[in-house]
Image (cartoon, rainbow, N blue to C red; front, side, top):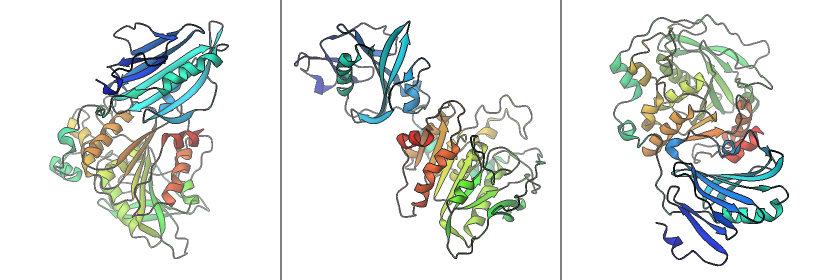
Length: 453
């Protein structure tokens, strides 16, 4: 029980309403009376007003019932029109977002105030509404309920799929597990070709890797005698980098010219079987060793600061850099945009793969989630509000259990709206100001919201 509530009922013109399900309570004005709710419903406290008519509802969603979404996305409704600006605030000591909306319901103009609160054991949704004419009088009562929110102290955190368990314990490295498994793959090869366009700052290089000397594209040494921070960029798709030097305004820009413009050295390696490289495509397997070899090559370049190299990748490239991060990559940080932490179930509808998709070992040895304890540098994971982020959240929890740093950031954009360029623009100043002895930089949802608007 919440000891701070003892004897609270009847104080002044307020009364206390509690819910054991969300382990929360509010103090409500006397003209808001509690209404009975279906015990199986999500609403844990429902208050109805009289004069003027207004309402407050509070709903709670346990962590295990949720998919990871931004606070901003939790407020969105197809039937509501934003009335004011979104505000990021603190409610009862927890991160929250609040916004007002207009709503035409059967010809009646309503105003809604919606807030969503992130708590260790789930998410709380507060919703207050009244007629537009009554809103000036009702708003105070609604806001007083919001302001009075409290939680039981020392809430235990829920895990997304239970505690990490043995997967978070160091037993054997990813590369050692692969060596023990000795999995075979069929011979796949890419027919793509790519050459830096005339005038590009990129030049074609060859770097040593297990299959042989592999092709990649590296920005030229500016000749200023300075060691610059660098980004090893892996774009999405299979077949090798073909768009690293492109800019796609208005579309999802998966090039890397914004890093180049900001003074970073950029290296986009192709892996085995790609762009006429020796070897064969293995889909997130041998390519991990190629990526580690590319990183070693980049560290040796005279115009690169070896202590300020960032791994970054989008889509399948994000999956690749995440695997490299758990396989011993020596980097300042890894930036993952929509990569997959787990490949379990990903290939069940694919017939043409270079390995047996029915073999669970094939998926496990391509899933970074099982080696979260081996992260040796910070990982930042970004994606729009999509269900595939659940695996990234589980991986981040496993990393935290092992004392490692991985943060997951739902990007508050709707549908397939482009976000890469905006998020990179947010990250670049943080990366430029980063230094090896500094603590990892932070990224807040409020910063992401402002970046993508």
